[in-house]
Amino acid sequence: MFKYYKKYLKIEKSFVGIISKVDSENELFEGLAKALDFPNYFGKNWNAVNDCLCDFSWIEDKNIALVHTSIADLEDELLIIYIDILIEAINSWKDDSEHNLTIYFDTSDKNRIERIRKAI
Image (cartoon, helix red, strand yellow):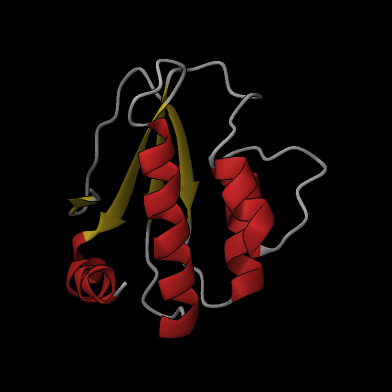
């Protein structure tokens, strides 16, 4: 479901959004908005994150890659919500011909993300 990278990542023919290290809910919302060029009406809350990740009408590229450099400092409670939303967004695009969403995390976050994924 998620892809992991170590140091270098080559992504071609995609809209690539990169989220730098985040350690709070607000930093995550701001990082997502900047990385994916969310519309001005983005409400900076979990429902708005879900809505935007399942829309992408403002992005012309078919393939969209969201790269996280580090989520190590994000609280588990927030990461659980975020991972759940990412899974829903990925699934919403699975059978769609308009967009394809791929999520990347650094390998240093893999164990934590997989543990949380199994708990959801």
